[in-house]
Image 1 (cartoon, rainbow, N blue to C red):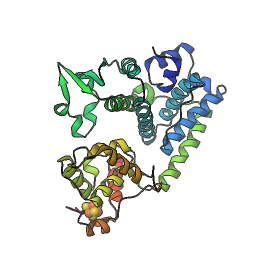
Image 2: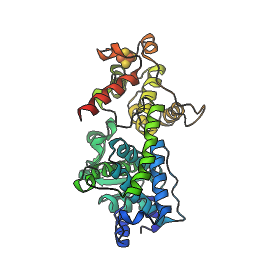
Image 3: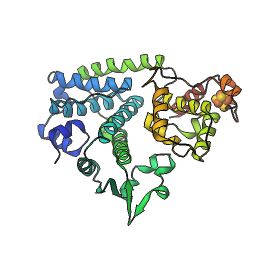
Image 4: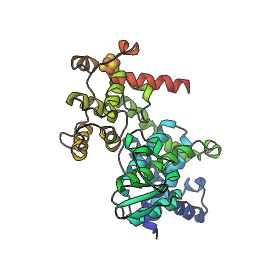
Length: 338
Ligand code: SF4
């Protein structure tokens, strides 16, 4: 059974929405009342901007449930595509971290309530109907997510806990982004007082963008990647072992465009000498989560050339000095077209 604490941990659940609806509140009600909830919602948005995972407060589950809904209203009301994606990405990471340590039977309930997925458990395998697996799995690039590489029996796919956690958390991310495209959400207007508070938080983005000149949050689009990185990813996918410098380059590049440690790890899975624990440790190190606590940038083009990693440079490569600069220009061009 899903408790109120579960709804506080996973406020994307339908039961959490039903609970909120039962209170019969609108966003206008948060203008002069419920300051603590608004503060918590703003905190959730700030954490997303900073790329940090908020700690769920189970002492006050109602506040957590309501503040999630208010945080969503704030990011939708600001109508900032970057912020929506950033928020969705951060929520995905938060739920993934919680789900991998969650009780197996609770995961089954969460999948049912959240997405109407019919999971079953056989020993330590979760089993999901193939059509439900395919709602999300095609979003992942790694070969292991392809149906052809999955254990499939009688129309059901077998998945370990880490993968089901990934699938559910990605479904939440997808839901947050998709919701922002609904007409009703596009028309959402925040009350002036809330809009002001949200704008103050949003101004943090501009500062952050200046500080983290190259950092991007969009899932990397193949055609936006510089040739050297595309080449390395292709080599890794085909199962070839790559040099230490090449590993460092591709890892630091992907981390700096906003991918999580687990997402980067997926790129290494096919590499000939893959060792999950060792690779995760190395990625965490480059991300600055352990060891020196420095988040590394990939080397400049000049250095990559000297290591033979600069392959098939194109016209744009002639104008840049750093692979992240290449990606930034490509993303900017795309955003201008939109
Ligand atoms: S010039 Fe720079 S970005 Fe372009 S392929 Fe070479 S190393 Fe990569």
